[in-house]
Amino acid sequence: MNVLIVFDTYYGNTQKVAELIESSLSNVESQLIKVDLITQTLVDQYDLIVFGSPTRGFNMTKKIKKSLKNLDYRSKKFWVFDTRMDVDDVDNKLLLKLVKRFGYAAEKMENILIKQKAIKAMDYTYYYVKESEGPLYETMTQKVKDDLIRLNETILN
Image 1: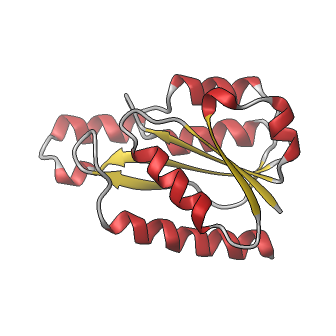
Image 2 (image 1 turned 90 degrees about the horizontal axis):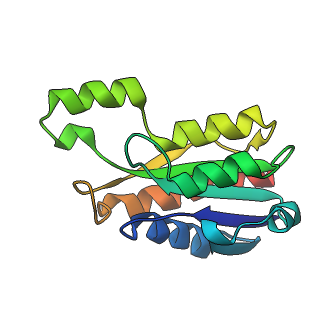
């Protein structure tokens, strides 16, 4: 099994998660790239593709969206994550309503890939950042490790 980890970032939080994922994968070959470098040739070389994007404006970055829509992921295994602000930390009823209405990046990324007939290796996940720019909450490092245990179990079975 080999894994391509593709990310975009604004403040470095999504990159930190992607790097932690790459360094924590066991018994697999992996490559970590910024979304600007993804090509169909790279996609074709990997068994599993992990995508990470910050949630900005209730969506993934434009570069991630473009790469998801313009390349062929049919029959590829995938897993997606986003970094986001924890709305429970913000006392803003309007923001809560907007999040309920428009959602986050990870679910939208997953939906695009499913429509392309890609194969979901594991349900999307998310990692919280403090306020809107981060850094990551300290508990997120352990969450990444826990998610990777599940992912390793999934891809090895």
